[in-house]
Length: 163
Image (cartoon, rainbow, N blue to C red):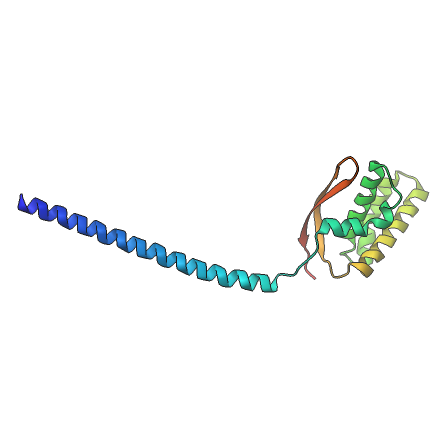
């Protein structure tokens, strides 16, 4: 009977040691994690550039196209042209025209005069991007324009392009 009590006592002591050891490890790891996250978040915040919301930038960029439009179809088309022009303006002009030309021809649906007008609008938007937003290198991956009755809400998903 005495040896049985000794074995039980030894087991309890070992279990207690193990619990203390695990508790110390958890506390040490938590302290290390807090310290690392505190250091990294400060460093991250110091170097993260503050960019305005791209949806607001696009709405401002598209102002020449959307001014005077009161129907949602016109606004949708203007925003679509603005987004296409924004993305194309990340390319050199000759490459941008080469990329956008076929899309504008398709939009014009064989109407030569409309195609010239669309190319003129594209050129205006291209130069507007280069003059007003030259440092903004975000590429628009996807967007949605939501009609909220009295206003339109633009949601934009983007990625940063290399310089």
